[in-house]
Length: 159
Length: 159
DNA sequence: TATTGTTATACTCTATAACTATA
DNA sequence: TATAGTTATAGAGTATAACAATA
Image (cartoon, rainbow over all chains, first blue to last red; front, side):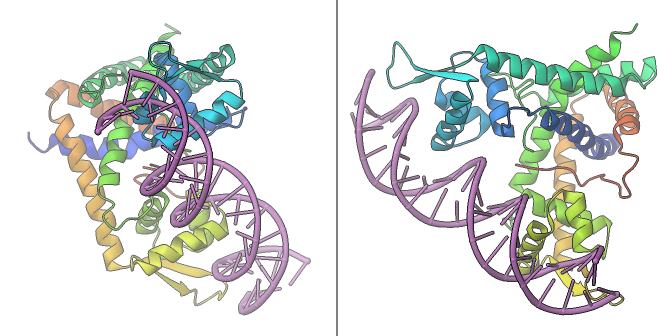
């Protein structure tokens, strides 16, 4: 039947924002260090792309270079990120998470995951199996293939 | 097995933001009238809650009253919303979508739904069935029950 | 000359505080 | 006195433009 994807699309459009709300609320409650959501996303990006440049981060997060420069200023001030000149190309900045930055990101992610797990535990085994299968399928068709870097676990934005 | 919800939680945390990115990108591309995402959400709220007051909207969207007042200013200026004093209580403002406002919201939602449907059409029938079942199950555990108003189709926030 | 990043400046969005009008 | 909304003002975040340093 051809109209079926339309029905599922409506369902996805209704339900996914609900889940996203829960994710965002949890992440927000964890912002102990008083960082913004773009800052949090930048931490997540650096966690997966150690030594990325300012331009890399700006492009991935979707900010201009000046904005990202200022954003990173804040992360450096808070001791979550280090900013060093690249040995090979002294124009580039090499961004790295500090221990505190890694710790912050990891614990925020863990807390969010736990929060989701508590909700999922309310479902039956077979419903959870459907969730697993659905997520695997959706991942295939929503994963941006052209991007050089995986956006996994980096996109809990905005707040 | 007790650890299973944890696995699905990780999967949900990885995949849901991907889908949300696609939703947001589509909505953003549709902002022909140059309105902000909170403004868009307000349109969606008013679409489901005709005649809501400024306070109602402010509480639902999560803005202060002054901020919502200013936000609505913009929507009124653009001809998407009307603002009238409530007949029974002249302190209250009654907010209503204009025809243009309804049209704008409806076409934005339709475009987003079509965009999702194109991706879902890439899946097998049985995968789509799993998606449908998963969304129904997730809706049950992520739907905020205490809220007086349904947040469905209103929560594609930020960008 | 092109690229990487920073500084200067302006605009949007949001909040808090103070105010007006109505109940 | 309490509630609904507006106006005034300030702070965060972002963008564009201009600049400095390196390739």
